[in-house]
Every structure is written in structure tokens, then in C-alpha cells.
Length: 459
Image (spheres, one colour):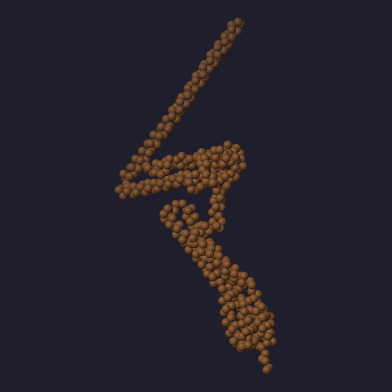
């Protein structure tokens, strides 16, 4: 019984010992597997690192080999080509090379012009462009080298633009409105610039001088500009036109400024204007003094003559301050003659009336016709002078050319200003003179017809 119990216990002990030994082997195998896995992962990482390090070199070598292969293929294709095909291929390559050189030269010229414009239009107080002038002026080397050297202009322009957006300043000089040069600080904020003297007593907005390197400034609030330069928040006046409004106001000037710019030929035009004005006023006053007679006036004269009272008839005829009054006096003096003779006297007097009322009118007509011709003469003379200057100095800057043409056109302006009113006055006065002559003729004919119908004396 005791052996039976010991045998199962022995078997159980052997099984437990064997299980523990198997468990240890499994754990050891698992540990070895994990170690092998870590070693494999480390080896893979090392291999990947080597591949990543060698890949650029292999890529470069592959690119070189690919280029060599492409070149060899091209040479092989050329070798297989005939003489004419090779010449044609060479012409195509030369044409392509010439086109690319032209493009490079064009781009280099654009960059040069851009640099010159940036330097020319730079506001006072802006940072220097910092581009080598030799690279802009000379084109040493090939087209590619010149273009690459001038590409620095773009970077410099962008740097200046960024600096202007935040504001930039530098020490410099400026001229005030009295022409005094003052040293101080020039500051640019985008499209506007300001100046502040060293002592802070003067300051204002800077405007383009167009005549030299020293900028001009318009006197303003120096304290506000000083606060602005310190970075403080201020309210300051800004000219959105960039100084063009002030320049335009100076160009407009006044009548005396236009007369000064008109030159020599403006004075004959002004003399014609004075003559036409004086003569026009004289004729207007002369016609204003005339009082138009009526048919009742002629009837009263005829009635007095029928009563044989010539003295009273002459008195009635002379009371009218009108050319018709003088004509009627002559007709009354000849009324004792035949009506035909009186009618001839009428037409003789009408010729004098026509001459009297038309006096000075031809002079006004001449001024109206001559003034624009003198203006055109002055314009042609000014244009000749302008083109002579262009012949000497060229036409690189259109502003002096435009200024010369505008001054040359001033004489034409004054000629038209004088001619148009003179023409209107002449037309009005001529119409008025014609009406006076016609009315005088009508009244004279009424008088003659009244004499024809005069009853005969029975004695």
C-alpha cells in the first residue's frame, strides 16, 4: 500500500521537475529570439543609414552616367547622320544658342534699367541699394555671367522694399523753402519721406527736387516728426499725390505767370487785345447814345413842312441824337426841290452814315483775325527752340520737352482768348451798325414818299 502511494508521488514529482525544466528552456529560447530580433533591427537600421549615406553619391554617379550615356547616344546619332543632317543640326543648335543669348541680354538690360529706376526714384532716407555699379555698367564675361551678376538687383530691391515698409532713416542734408541747407535725419515710410534737423527746430515732408542730390522739404510740425522718428504713434499730414499737387499748383500760377512764359510774341497779342477792347467800348458807348426815331417823328416833320414852317421842321429834325437826325436836316433843307433830288440827297447822306457807324469796326475785325495768327507764330517759334534743345541734349527725359511745348502753346491760348471775344464784339457791332443804316434809310424814304404825296398849292 505504501509503495502504491509513493509511485504516484514520484511520478508527480518527476512531471513537475520536467515542467519546470521545459519552462526554463522556453524562457531561454524567447530571450534568445528577442536578442536576435534586436540585433537584426539594428543591422537593418545600420544598413538603411549606409544606404541613405551612399544614395546621394550613387544618385550623382547615376546622373553622370546618364548624362554620359545621353551624350554618347547623341554622338552615335550624329555619327549615323549624314553630312547634311549634321549641318542642319548644327544650325538648329546655333540658332537656339543665339536666341538664348538674346534673351539673356534682354533680361540683363531689364535688370539694369530696374536698378537705375530704383536708384533714381529712391526717396530721401531710404537705404542704399547696395549693388556693384561695375556689374551694371560693364558686361564683362559671357551673357550668363552678366545675367547672374545682375540678378542681385532683385534681391536688393526686395530688401529695400521690406525696409521701407517698416521705415528707414539715415543722416543727410535737405534744403528748406528759403534755400538754406540744413543737416539732420531723413526718414522714409513707404512712399513718403520726412526731414528733421539735428536741433529739432526744423522739419517737414520731403518733396522731389528734380534738380540735384539735395532734397527739398516743406516746413511742418517738427515736434510731430520727432515723435514719429522715435517710434511713437502720431497724427501727421500726408500728401497722397507725392508732391505732385504742389508742383501742379506752381505750374498753374496766375495770369502774370502765363504772360511771363509766353515770351516775346505775347506782347503784340496783348496790344491787339487792348486795341480791340478800347475800340469796342467806344463803339458801344456811341451806339448807346443813339435814340431810335419813329415814324411819328417823320410825320411831324412833314406836317410842319406843309404849314410852310421850315425853321420848326429843322428844329424837330435836329432834336434827334441819331444819324437819321442829321440826314433829315439835309432832306428838310432840300425839300423845296423835287422829290427826286431829295431822294438822291438821301442816298448821298446814307453813304456818310454808313461810313460813320462803321468807323473802327474794321480794326476790331483785324484784331480778331490777327491774334490767332500771332499766337500760332509764337507757338511755331517756341517749338523750333524746343527742338533745337532736343538736337543738342537729346530727348531722354520727356519732362523738359513737355514743359517747352506747353510754354509754346501759351501764345496760341492768348491768341484765341483775344480773337474769340473780338469776333463776337465785331459781329454784334456790325449788326447794330447795319440796323442803324437800314432804319435811317427807311425813315428817309418815308420822308421822300411823304413829299411825293404833298398836295400842290392852288395858287
